[in-house]
Image (cartoon, rainbow over all chains, first blue to last red; front, side, top):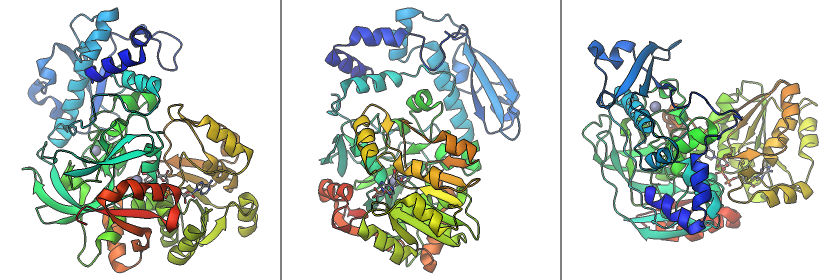
Length: 163
Length: 391
Ligand SMILES: NC(=O)c1ccc[n+]([C@@H]2O[C@H](COP(=O)([O-])OP(=O)(O)OC[C@H]3O[C@@H](n4cnc5c(N)ncnc54)[C@H](O)[C@@H]3O)[C@@H](O)[C@H]2O)c1
Ligand SMILES: [Zn+2]
Ligand SMILES: [Zn+2]
């Protein structure tokens, strides 16, 4: 993923623009910058009872391996259990944040991934591996390099409201 | 092994790719016996679905034989002949347990793009872009089937491959349109599109008790096939005013349930078509909703419209006023196949649901690029091309 993003960026000669766009926090329909962006809880709803999420108060892995604050609540109706988490460690800012995201090392992204994995492990007993990527390392010949750049950039896991 | 790979807009090639292996304990490896073209693939080929990458294996409607199972597969063993749902479900999340399988919360390992663009992700789908999990498709000699206990269904003995095959995608999709569109005994139902999906929707409406089913398309062979094998009334939209025709055939009311089985590349007539076509360039996210517009205008006040055709981005001139003021219920979904497939296989076995006529062409995998040209251009009466890797 990293390699492809960088490849496309240099190919399109739009590296600077894209980097700025990546760093911009004004995405989505909201015209207002989210003042709580870096502190929001991320959450998954798991289809099980609260006791099954943290038996004897022990957090499930891989969430247990991270430096996180955690909250567990019963979900409304028959929806199961809400598992909330957010990183305790200091958040990278600006360019460092962009780089951390591209490397998949951003603390929020790690927490988000861990939440998804916990949900899948509890519900299904495994975390589904993607099929190996067979695509060629060069960008697709589809005549729309800019759209491609946007696709790739969007896939960078920044929309954190949902998991 | 051999596989059919997407290379770019309108470009498919047959390549040698590594054989799939078991990656999760609940996976099975299926040797593909029959795999077929779907209208959804045309949207990929047209370049209208973002997040395809050169080299991606396409295909999602298929049937095969299990050749290997992971240690946690309980319900299948090597040698089983199975039809596999095009949508991948885990069977245990809230969505799967509520029979909303295409919304499975655990089967899409790459949900980020969909979450950003749509505000939420779908299940994984075989051979259907990296937005839907990046899974390899079925136009190949072998395929890995995740959560095999939930996604593979045994085919009753005596049912031919080329009949059972369509219970993977076209038949459950059509059935869902009629079922979730709310078709009840005595209803009048109109279906836009006489492809495999539209034909199956029309047949489902009848089996659910509709009094009258009217199918709309422009290809004479498809209209004739729908009249003959499905038993629906048919309307050629290039030869008549569809809205007037439907009013006249329904006592002035309009259909109770309208099912759209056309999708984002709908064909239209007149200047509107040229305008919409000019706007719809790959990557712009603008799609052509002619059939959907017509369905909403045709539907009787208080009726329901179900969108089976695939859309991925935005449409212009959506008749929101008609929908709101006529009090319509509009729904859509990728198919929740798992809730219907066993029942559909039973109906195929009993002869209540006929699907074999959809397989108008059968070819070896090597001929897939030519097969897709024919399917796209609807040449030679083509409705579905079935590829047999063993041919
Ligand atoms: N919801 C799902 O899970 C699901 C599953 C399978 C397919 N699909 C979608 O269903 C749609 C149909 O699939 P298919 O395999 O039958 O495709 P197809 O290409 O074989 O058939 C589409 C038919 O629509 C007709 N059509 C085009 N414009 C029309 C119009 N304005 N009015 C009436 N008919 C019109 C065409 O002539 C053609 O016969 C596609 O959009 C496909 O992506 C959705
Ligand atoms: Zn399909
Ligand atoms: Zn699920």
